[in-house]
Length: 120
Image (cartoon, rainbow, N blue to C red; front, side, top):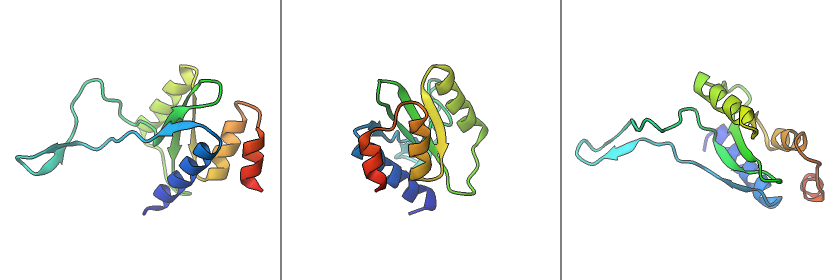
C-alpha cells in the first residue's frame, strides 16, 4: 500500500468512528474487453481531480478531502475541484495525516466528544 493509501485508510477509520458518512469514488478508466486494457472515460460530465474522500459532514455539508503524503503535490484539477466545493458551500481541504484532517474539520464545527476520545 502506498503512503497516501495508508493515510487515506486512517482518515476513513477516523471519519467513520465519529459518525461521518464518507466514501471513495472510483475513478479508474473503463475496461475495454476487446483491447484488454483500461481506456479513459470520455463522459463529458466526468469531473477530473475529484477528491479521494467524499462524504457528508456533520450538519449536512458536502465534504471533500484530498489525501497527500508529506511531499505529495496537488494537480491543477485537484486544486480546482477543492475550490469548486468550497465555493459551493462545502468543506474541502488537503490532509497529509489523520490529525490534520481532524484539525481541518474542527474549523467548521465544534470539536465534539468523539473527536477528543479518538486522540486519547
